[in-house]
Amino acid sequence: MEKSYQGILPEVIYAHEYGAATYKNKLRLQDNGVEIGYVTKGVMRFAIEEGGGGFLCKKNDMVIHRGGYSVLVSSDEPHSHRTIGFLFNVEGLKGIDLQSFPTVLSASEGVFPLHRLVDEIIEVYNQEPENKLLLGGLALELLSKAAKKVEQATDERRFGELAYVEKAKKYIYDNARRQIRQTEIAEYLRITPGYLCNIFKRITGETVMAFINRTKLRQIKAVMDRENVKLAKAAEAYGYTDPNYVSRIYKKYFGENITSKEKM
Image (cartoon, rainbow, N blue to C red; front, side, top):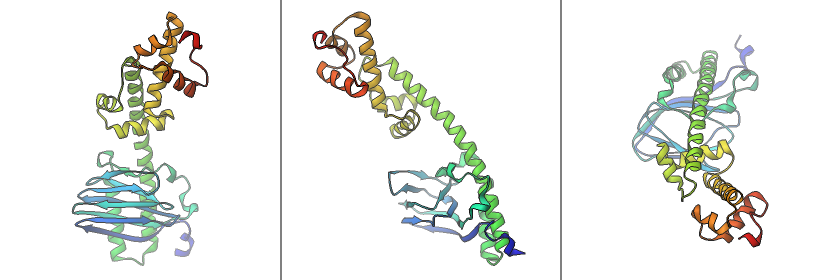
């Protein structure tokens, strides 16, 4: 009977609770591997080896990551976490979108039912490690519910991120006539500068500073055309003291001259 489930149910390869005073390790699952767990004490940091970045995972936050890339895990304080790892077969994952998995689900995003499944898998793995059918069924249930929770959380986060980006754009439009720093925009939105840069680039396709420059340059050009003023005067109104610099970056951004030499 059990053979009919081979290749459909995930195979649990470890399920445990681990704790340490400090921790630093580089983990890499097999390409068809998944790890799901949650922090039970302290704080852990996870980062992708290539590309940098990372996040802090606090007590009760849930971590989900796939195989195929390395994850740097560290903690500078006493911590513990409960985690399971399993291998899957594509046939057993129809209808489950692993590609949408983020790295973390916060405790506030309704993850406690997933905690209970992790706990149950660990208990079964320790008491009945030979019961592959039960373990695989529980792992598949966890994977399916985690995918649904991720989809819901991703939609909610995307809506919030779009709102932040639109507010940032309006702030830039309204304050284009003076020097604008990324830190002040983040402070206005009550988010971190790093988070602002990340979501702005991902949603708009350009950096915050590039958007600021484009906005200022468009408004300078509009003032020149509308009020028939020279570049130096229009640029000065937007905080630029060197009209030649403005002319260069305008051509860089828009591929054409902002004005003729006679009008500078």
